[in-house]
Length: 120
Length: 108
Figure (cartoon, rainbow over the protein chains, first blue to last red):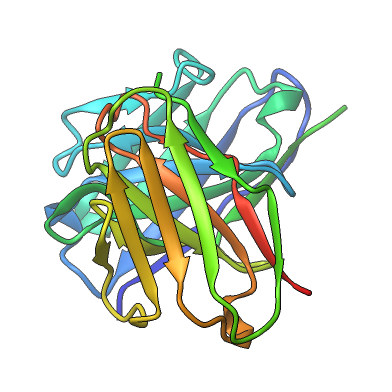
């Protein structure tokens, strides 16, 4: 069974940093690009970032560009999101998601989500 | 950035009824549109990709149609577990990927 297990969320002050993790199992992790998507509770979905299978290519939404860094360690089946210079508007649930098999940029499945709260 | 507009915001229906959800794109995305279902406290789940293809394990009562700028998700006969929020997503212009604002299907 494909599983994505997330960790690393929490409460941080404005300007602070946080690192999210996503550990994959049940599939060949290094064969798939991975995404991060966030959601303010009760609101819609916002795409955050994409990383290629080997980690050589990364892409970001405009709202996080220059502050967030996505990375992966294929030897550990792990995906990361380093979030720096956090703002109150970054408060959201953050989901990691795998690209659907043979269908780039469709997201399936998603991790369980981890909450990030930026507040003083 | 491609903007996706979903309507209606809320759909109030009874089990067994047909649900028709709409997603309109600000420019043509050809058939590069998908649908996700999200239940309370859960992550989204892919239902439909490339406008009309059901993802693995998705019941046949879910169907997608459309191309260009206008798309529809139809649930032929609502089951109790189908009451949820549905989002459309485009991948035609994937930098960034964008999602619609969602349609909540609630029990009437």
